[in-house]
Image (tube, helix red, strand yellow):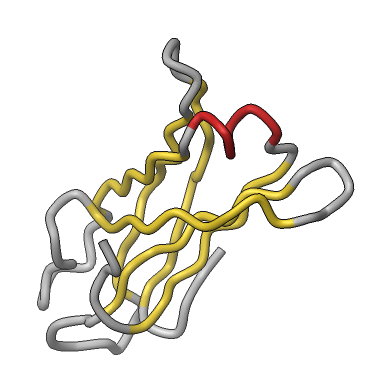
Length: 101
């Protein structure tokens, strides 16, 4: 999973007792990228037949990736119970611009 300016690593999904699910992993800036990165994450859930169940917005826990340090920052995206209950697969992508929510 990666974007032009951000690399995502070690993403996984954890089901919660309330029926929702947490998608979490690690993000870091790509090599040769300097300055602020104006981007956010999308987690799109798909059912067993490949139909999209919806998209949830998220970002890295620090709010922005460090403008100088290439160390990884954790990210977290919450999927609603409706999406989580039917999800067979989740795709995480880096999207340009600020979060929608």
